Figure 1 (cartoon, rainbow, N blue to C red):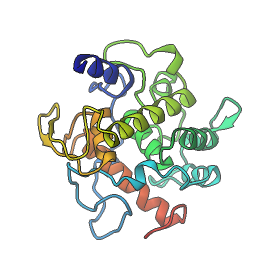
Figure 2 (cartoon, one colour):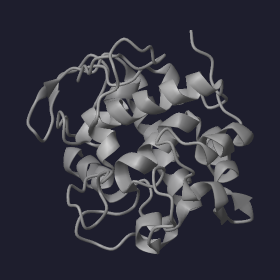
Figure 3 (spheres, rainbow, N blue to C red):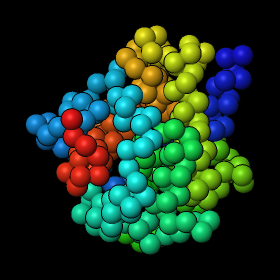
Length: 241
């Protein structure tokens, strides 16, 4: 059973670590840590591998509207206009597609935004990237060394697939059925011993079983999510508590 679960995770989740298959951000700003005196609700100012992000910033799907995500694209945390501001898919703007997937799967819009950047550097780019990069937007259904499953190709399909899988992993921690669960220590592929302090952190390690401080993995998830939360708070898209 454990072998089956691992294979399922690698088939759907982000088990890749190479660069040419677009696993991992190539945006230099994503590796710069914001000052630790700035508040980012739901994301700690200092990285803690046992609590990458809070549960609220993971599953609160009603936090941002499509109009607010559109503004996020038009004036991104990178000080530019993301190409996503002008992209449409399935008759929807990229912002509408993201919020639809977020609402449908019960995942915070900022988590899907961060995941697109972590996996394929989609948010910070100003010009439309290759279709291959778009087809692997969240690394979902794209196992290492093999072509992506056709049913998961495309931005909207990736948003739905990624959102669905993240939610499944979160729920598996909550009901105790997952490989990664809150309060249970496991080894990452670095390897590090991690004891998730919440279900969001357990889900993130199940999706990407790496810590990789300063270079990728869940450290990168933390850093990008914090950057996005702080930007959204500063612009009034989400409330700062």
